[in-house]
Image (cartoon, rainbow, N blue to C red; front, side, top):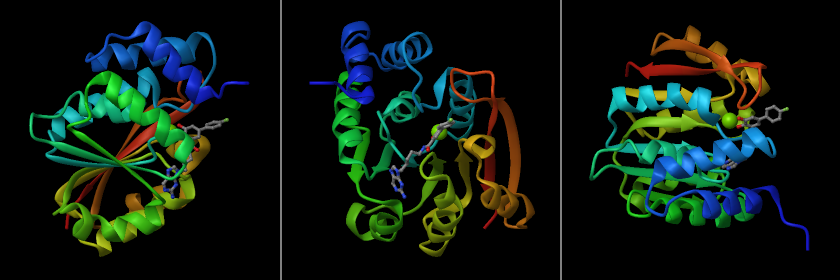
Length: 214
Ligand SMILES: Nc1ncc2ncn(CCCCCNC(=O)c3cc(-c4ccc(F)cc4)cc(O)c3O)c2n1
Ligand SMILES: [Mg+2]
């Protein structure tokens, strides 16, 4: 039977990455998606910007919206301090099954909690169900038209600490125009655009970093 793209990405990890070595998992996915078939991972170019923001924030708690195969999940978690935790939300069970195996291959199960469901349903439950106080960093990489409503939901639920950072992928391609307009015009955010390219292509894309001022 025909394999799926996420299954082929997992295969590339299992064939080319070293168990317990997160950076070799990231490298294996990038090499596969650059040479064999495109996939919607944040990728190596935007990934370096992601790395620099994660290192600068040095977060204790991270929320990722949209796991897909776990590429950015592993990339972020590989940079977290020892007791830091990352919660990642994925609503497609087929993606979640693959992401769990990619996370396990990287040896990062203890740092990462993958929760299946949609962001709109799960965000209001994160405090009571997962004992989360507030996030230091939120990486938005899910439905582009959910970036703005979920940002408002995260604020309403008091899930973003003062000085906490929102980092949004794909603000140019596919684009999140309402989100960009909001974070760039709101007095409660200090935003900065990091120009880059759509993963594995020459098409323009970028990340928007927005610091919550409280
Ligand atoms: N609410 C909720 N809660 C939880 C969830 N978990 C998953 N989802 C649904 C997420 C579905 C995938 C989202 N990601 C993208 O669509 C995406 C697309 C492109 C792209 C594609 C084609 C092109 F020609 C050019 C660019 C590139 C990217 O880097 C992208 O990240 C959820 N939704
Ligand atoms: Mg993306």
